[in-house]
Figure 1 (cartoon, rainbow, N blue to C red):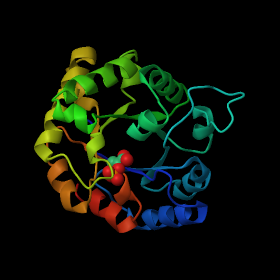
Figure 2 (cartoon, rainbow, N blue to C red; figure 1 turned 90 degrees about the vertical axis):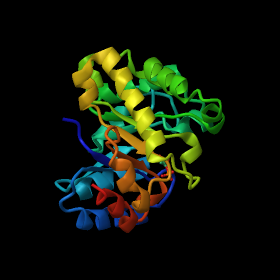
Figure 3 (cartoon, rainbow, N blue to C red; figure 1 turned 120 degrees about the horizontal axis):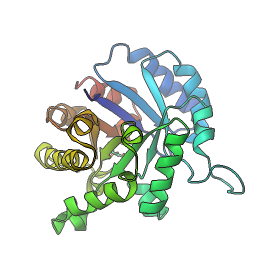
Figure 4 (cartoon, helix red, strand yellow; figure 1 turned 180 degrees about the vertical axis):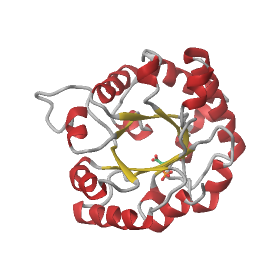
Length: 249
Ligand code: PEP
């Protein structure tokens, strides 16, 4: 059966010392979670945080990786470099990467493959912007994002992927999709996976919700049949808030 997961996305927050302090606090506070717990940190934290959390209940991931293997790509960090820190996960296709760095279907397809080839589990983000939701085309948007960047994978590769549905209009805005709105699209995503890889794969794939998830709304969201946890931005920056969400399971 699929795993329940609460994953934090620190984005571009916290210097090294602050990040290590937060990871250390989480290490102490997350003792017996009823779900898998992951923190995705800026590249500069990965090695220290992965070492600190070795043997703990908190897994580590990056927020992105390069589509290239190595070479003259100043400022980029490859999937193999990420893996060498001890990190096990990698967010790919976050809406902020799609929007500010113009990452499209093809680049994201390559990044997913690079992550998998290097032993990282992708947390692949999809979601519509406000105008698309207003036009009622959210399913079409999400379907294209998934088909174009994930459905080239073999079943074995796909089994390593975690999907995160993050309506862009809910990220960092304080607006949250209602549990019913989120459930509707999570169920749709699962049906797409079933159509491509079969029912068993669909049942085994974790689909996380992201977008202003906090301790006060997590329980209601996670109670839905097809919502297997959350990808958490703002609320992942304070140990008590993050633990409040973990404890919703
Ligand atoms: C995110 O960026 O992945 C996210 C869900 O952010 P927030 O929780 O702050 O809306």
